[in-house]
Length: 225
Image (cartoon, rainbow, N blue to C red; front, side, top):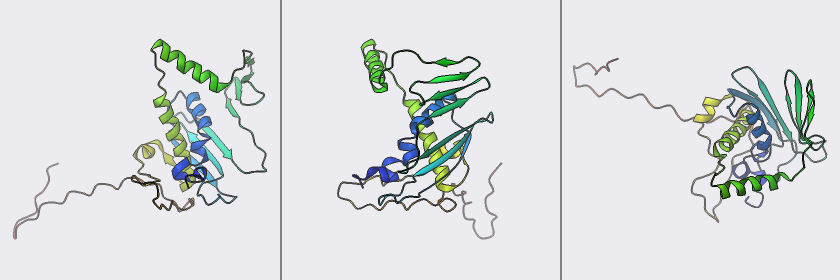
C-alpha cells in the first residue's frame, strides 16, 4: 500500500485532498480565507482503483453565508479531455488562471499579466529564503490547515452524499488509519465509499448523568435547574 499510496485514502487523502487542494486553496483565497458554511458533493469511481479505495472524479459545491457558491470539479481518468483551470466570475469581469499561460481578467477593465514569467517553485523558494535572511518568517500554517480541511469537507460530502456543514467538520471524528501502525503490520483500509451508505462520523453524544440510586421509600434526587 505504501508503494501504491496514491490509490489509498488513508495515505493520500484522495485526489481532491492530495492534488485538487491547490484549486481549493485558491477558492479560499478568493473568499478572504474564510471557511464555507456548507458543502454538498458528488463523486465516484468509474475505472478500477488499482487495488485502492479512492474516487476518480469529484464535484463539490461550497456555499458561504452570503449565499455565494464556489464549485470545484476534478476528474482523473485516462483518455478524457482534461485541463487545469480556475475561473472567478464577478459582476464586472472574469479572472482566469491556468489558461493561456498567464492569468488575465476579461471585462470592463481588461488585464493580463505582462511581467517576467518565472517558475512558481523558484518564486516560493526565493520568498522563503528572503524571509529567513530578513528574520521575517513566512508562516502559512493557518491557510494550509484551512484549505486542507475545506478539501476534506468536499471529499466527505461526496463520500457520504450528505450536506456537510463547517461546524460538523470541526467536530468530525473521522480517522482513516490506526494510530500505532508499524512497518510489517497488516492493515485493511476502509472499503470504497458508497454515497448514501457511507456515514459521516461525529463524536458520540455524552451520556446523560444518571441520578444517584435512592434508598427504599425515598424519591430520586432531582437536579436543580
